[in-house]
Image 1 (spheres, rainbow over the protein chains, first blue to last red):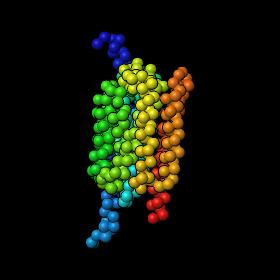
Image 2: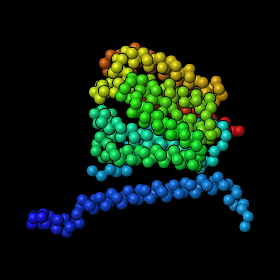
Image 3: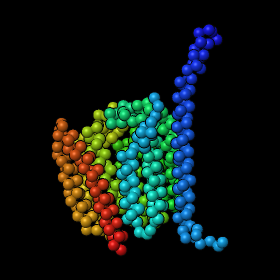
Image 4: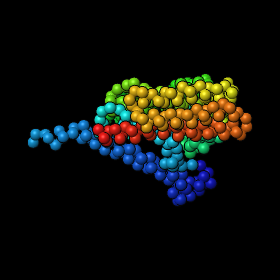
Length: 62
Length: 294
């Protein structure tokens, strides 16, 4: 590695490397989207189970 | 450039999706029996997701020709907003997810029909027929005609003559609808090598076929009344709108030259959207009124 390249890497580190910042932001957005979809599925399956159980959910023996 | 939520929404073909959801809703409301509103909502959501997924997969496969057609050049893949690989993963995950969730929560008949709809649109229409035969949209039209059957099956768990009639109406409506569009977008299709009927058989034959399919469609559209699915309001609507449809179809046959020819085709194309929407809307209102009064 020559002196010029070393300088570039150092200045990128100092500036926080915008390329990897962008990649990290995209990854974060994707993770939020996947989390939201998983949460929606949990809610859907929970609600559908309650509907299918109907009154039996409340009518169980204690 | 970073893809936005809007780019992913565009990948789902929201306008096509809205017609799919609407016709599925009509199938669901018209079906005998009861479905819990939550189950109905989940069924409609999964039908919407499945329809959107097939739109995304269609855009993945057709990205090369979409980039060269005026109507489709602004789609997310040709614009470089989303990569073809991203569209493929997105469409595949949503396709499988929508079918599995519909099957687990509602029933497996409707899930199988949704899977058939997606598979038919991607494998039969997009990959096999679209670039090979001028009958692409005749046979491929079945994919767009399945949603009322999916909605019906979500309620009843089966298929019946009524849901088949709803299927046939959309199936028969598709050729005059798309050929009217193809008449005034002919050059686009020709340039990218998609063998739409005006490209392979010429405008005159396309106009003749539009009239033939319209003559088959209009009496078929009255069939829901004959089997007791639609009432008098539906019959009246199908007759009046059917007559207008035929007038516009014959106009397309009669006015063949220049801008007036294009205008006649465009008029039929736009009216055909209203026609299908109005038929199903009247059926929906009648069915809701009948069920509320019962």
